[in-house]
Length: 460
Image 1 (tube, rainbow, N blue to C red):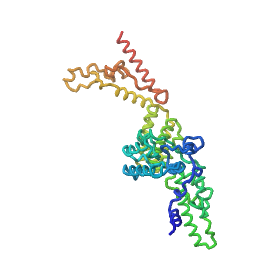
Image 2 (spheres, one colour):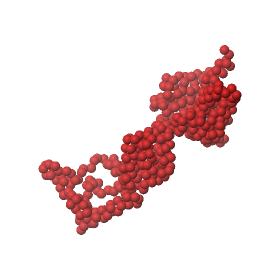
Image 3 (cartoon, rainbow, N blue to C red):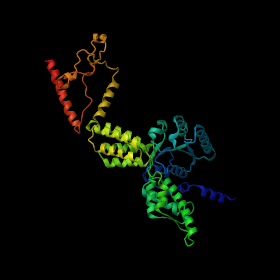
Image 4 (cartoon, helix red, strand yellow):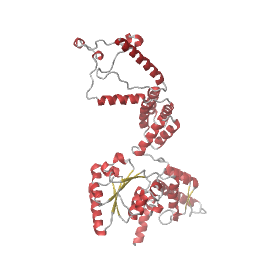
């Protein structure tokens, strides 16, 4: 069997997304903020100024392909490792290979590490001396926030580039190239992608070129099978033309049509967007992010727990009903499940977004915790506030001169101190002029006025 035939068979078995990897920078789609003339990365590639770097971005944005193109453009050897499958032994082997390439070929080596965030600290540290002495030019790829997942020592030795999801025109370009390329794409199969099918595929890909090509390939297979079945029943059917319509794309894209990972960086970005939309008083945006997370497969119970926190942190005493409604939504979902229970969570989210806002309790809580942590020791409880269940305790003046509030005017012991003697009076809680806290503020101001009168009278 000839080498050309073996190569052709290999090409036939490779997934479309792998076959369609751009072979030059001109064919690369997206990342114009990095690859436009004058941008640092573009200039480095153009002038062969190879350096160690990190690509951070969602799946299907071209991290691996870009690393390959950089190595090729700079005339360097390309070695790849997957952090999912590799360990320190594999790192040492790759470094040894790079040293051999330097001696035998006098070439630099790009060591590309996919999913680098999966390596632990010691594995990440194994790269450091070889980056510093120039044995390798390190290019890492990660879908996770590197500031959380990578060691500072490694981050300080690489330049981080943020890759963005491809826009609709970038995805369209990728799809059209695959449909027209007769050598490695689908061009030889005479496939027609209907306009509405194209738009649905672009939308469903959600900025992920790999996903678009994988679904296009699967749709092509399904359309080919359907065409073959149709040809058996109708001998007049033109079997040379394969049409992919919207129904076929909908069938292959129905599983997880939103870019969402249940614990990665995008997960936290979306829950942050939901929280901030509620805080900002925007029920429509809050619903958008809620539904985006639900459609992406987020556990509704996780959202329900976060909604309870929002009720306490963002609304607080401006509308205490918000916390009750959030808890009720959580309970309702546990009783009904999906999809009925999700409506209760949506109801709570809309209510929270529409409710008056106050973080006064949240800020008061943090201030009190900060004050206590700053103290060197726990303050003693004043004697008059201590319980005295025994005669001995009473002899020690526990509970002496305590004023029972219910027996005082207005059920309030004006001028009484409840703080440690060493600390004196403090104020952590400052109600806002919104919602119920307007009334709370008025009540507290009135009580503090009573305190001031009582204490001034005592001084007189």
